[in-house]
Amino acid sequence: MSAAPIFRRVALIGFGLIGGSIARAARAEGLASEIVTTARSEKTRARVVELNIVDRVLETNAEAVKDADLVILCIPVGACGAVAQEIAPHLKAGAIVSDVGSVKGAIIREMAPHLPDSVHFVPAHPVAGTEHSGPDSGFAELFINRWCILTPPEGTDPMAVEALRAFWAAMGAKVETMTPDHHDLVLAITSHLPHLIAYTIVGTADELAQVTSSEVIKFSAGGFRDFTRIAASDPTMWRDVFLNNKEAVLEMLGTFNEDLSKLTRAIRRGDGEALFDHFTRTRAIRRGIVEIGQDSAAPDFGRPHPPLKKAE
Ligand code: NAP
Image (tube, rainbow, N blue to C red; front, side, top):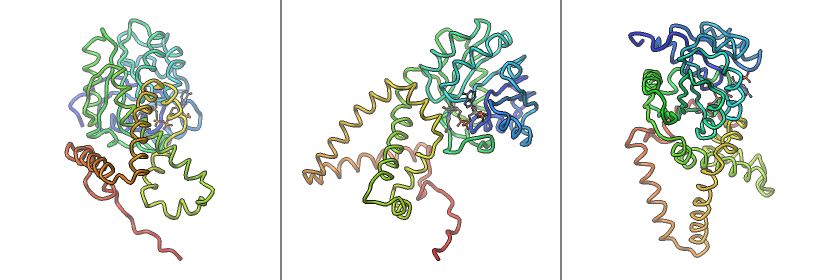
């Protein structure tokens, strides 16, 4: 547990994978004297009460942000503008308002106009997640050794940025600050495009008439399985990512399509050298990711393998 709470009252709007993980980590590390939360549905709010990992569960967003020193929107990107408008009159002067959205430019455009000058707006994106969602999916260790990117608009009070940095660092994250546009470009290639490719491949395999869906599932270990994990990610979240990071994703898709054409040409011409060179370069990138500690070198990403059921 850290020496003293960083914030007196933290309010989490939305309690799914990310909100639930923040609640668990902040409680485990003693980062707030009080954690309050709310969620859109009665079902989720009731489940959070049962989980007993926050101090109070409130019915409305307005009640949740009252007197909070840090308010974090942990909801889909597309919902942030309307919620900012709803909570604006109820925010305490001097409060820090943040979010966890996977896109930053659009979040700032949608939220900032509604927020009063008396609060500090410090958008954030924890680059950590799983394909699971909902109040039971969070866990306190989610952010350990993962990046959290802060994108404060120009002129934001440095003390507010520092307080939020300290909060994320205390949950185990490595924190970096960048402009929203740069964030959106970097994430378009490292996260958004890979998800789009996974959604495409899994969809294409499903549609192929000559490969029945049972065969796709049966032989899934041959690379396809890893795509299915990514393609199982929350549809609402990812719809909002592509709607709100359109320019950067389209730019990266243009480059991707050119590279795909080059590889297509190499296969058509039987150009083994071009294929070998390309695959050697990509293998070095994987080694680089392992070297800087962003992943494990163990086979299959170091996943534990419980005994598999024997076929009948
Ligand atoms: P999640 O598990 O699906 O939880 C979403 C929460 O938002 C739920 O509490 C849900 O309420 C609420 N919500 C949904 N639609 C809403 C709306 N229109 N208005 C108000 N509340 C709404 O999602 P998550 O994975 O935690 O993602 C939340 C945010 O984190 C997203 O902006 C996403 O871009 C970002 N993020 C996600 C990941 C990831 O890997 N999942 C990683 C980094 C950042 P109910 O339960 O009551 O429906």
